[in-house]
Length: 569
Image (cartoon, rainbow, N blue to C red; front, side, top):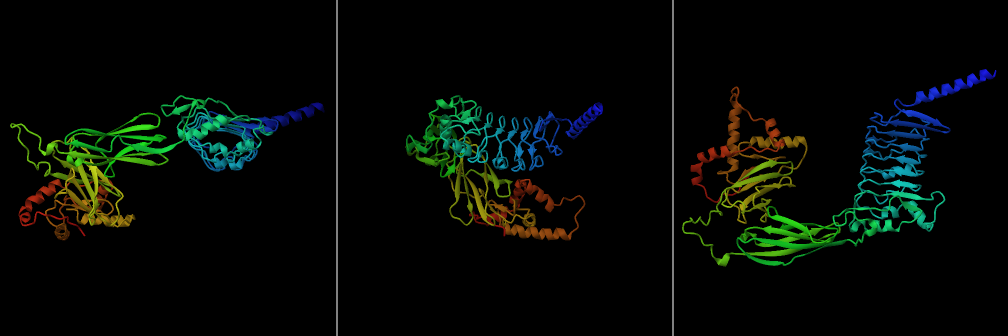
């Protein structure tokens, strides 16, 4: 009888063990120990979080797999789960509700993943969480209320991340820290010690970290740092220093000063403008001329001390047109400041420089009357890019001015372009608006052939409207530069009225439509033009203009030399 009972018990144990093994995931191991049951999957090939995990599992350890996301309710059915280890996977994203239904969870480890942020509100579902391990990730920001729902923690590991600057308020607003403060720093019954690991981050030790550094220095039991030697990664002057060695000062708005604010120089001289910008943290510094960013001149900066930057603007071979107000601007997260420097450029004793008798004297108007070829080189949905070409005696010293504005506006925006640059981009154009854009030598007034007139479309972005507007471009294809969203343009070197060309072209198109097209003859289609427009390409009309000028020489003799902009309606 005893033998029979023994065999029955042995059979039940074998059956239970078989059921336990059969319910475990393939490639994983399941272990039962009293009231606990664990699932371990090491070096698995999971691409996603497995869905058929036994519901009575209390501890899960899945490592070295390939899933990148923890979706919503990934462990919703595992209400008994207390410990979740997901170390050394490729997790980059966690749904804000990934901890849904896990009210009994006390330990969460996500070491060695690729997390750049954490949905901190997700911990509202795990109020019993005691251990949170996030080391060896890429976290660079901690929101002010990140720890709002972590009121039961005894261990928080944020080491080996990319944290640079965090506010002391992150910890001041932590309910657990507030509880410690209310108890006068005495140990709490449910948490004798609270361990924080914050070492080996890329701490940027400027004035913005002042409050956090003071908080770290003030910590005392029951809050303990795993490694109290927190080290600065930057800025350069403080790299390698420990927090207890720092003397950080309150942040301040930039203050910009100039060594001198009024300078007088002769033509063809070289000059470098200087300014000093003092701020905490260190500011961004740049120069402007006529409220425009300067392009083409050499700018340099050097750090004088921890709070001061010296900025320089080198202007080679001064011209009379370089006369004006140059502004040095500094900006940081608190505010900005600037200083203006007036540069007066004077001719050398009011006379022209002497020249050798063997050296031919160039005409006084050689630069003034230089021909500038301007064209639309590229188009975008909201703007155009122009390019220009000019034959210059000293291209390395000659600068240009771009005149841009609405056609009906008397005042144009002036953009000064330094030597060696021959393009400029206009963006953020208004719909259904006529614009002029001209390129001149130095600060000269625009001449004939140095401007382009174009008009934007109605601004409706629907595909049907876009096709309609581009179709208009097809109709006037022989003379109009194709620009996006219904823009069209005529250059001011056109030798006759644009409207006349459109009418003549339309007549020719009617005649061509009445006559059968020969085999093999090329036909410009709407699709081909649209494809060119989408790629941002502009047809080159140079050869067409040469033929047109030859045929219209006689017509031009009878016309006035004062040619106005022409428009297409």
